[in-house]
Length: 113
Length: 112
Image 1: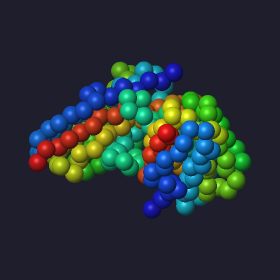
Image 2 (image 1 turned 180 degrees about the vertical axis):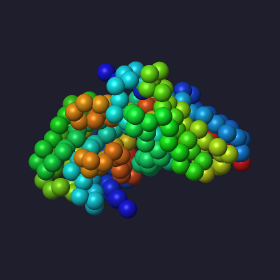
Image 3 (image 1 turned 135 degrees about the vertical axis):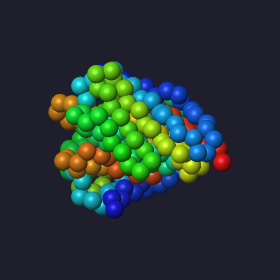
Image 4 (image 1 turned 120 degrees about the vertical axis):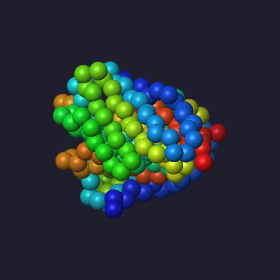
């Protein structure tokens, strides 16, 4: 059974800092990995999706990397802003048949002005 | 823009009541999902549906049922609500050939 872990559970940084969020998963036979953002009391918004054959994806100040062999992904946020404050969730879709998605418990990020 | 809407943002019910949570998507997606989200446990899949009138159990289906009579609408039913069903409920949808799920805003349910 796939397990997805995100460490740390919470992170507080001053505005302007570059930061890295971590995600690890136990079964490397994945279809893809996604990073989502969740604002308080809201649904999830997809940020970046990495296919199992890819190493990284970039969107603006965000860069996500994937190392399937070690079961790890990182989300790099450059020049953080207060508007980046949210919970970031990692989600892994398993390969084979219907791509069941397993979510991590998230990292709650606070960017302090 | 894909839009997934949920019938209520907040709901307060009493133990034993029958509860209906409704989800509607406007992008003709085949697949729809119901998750619950609890602190420290993340999102857990309750049920999903890949076609009208089709349903599959997720990881935690006990105490829940679902209905999908129309492609755009997926309902989650709590036959007899219990306090341990207090949670945030999230609906999502996607197309079979599309890799990201689109989420609704969530319904925060409190069972007293």
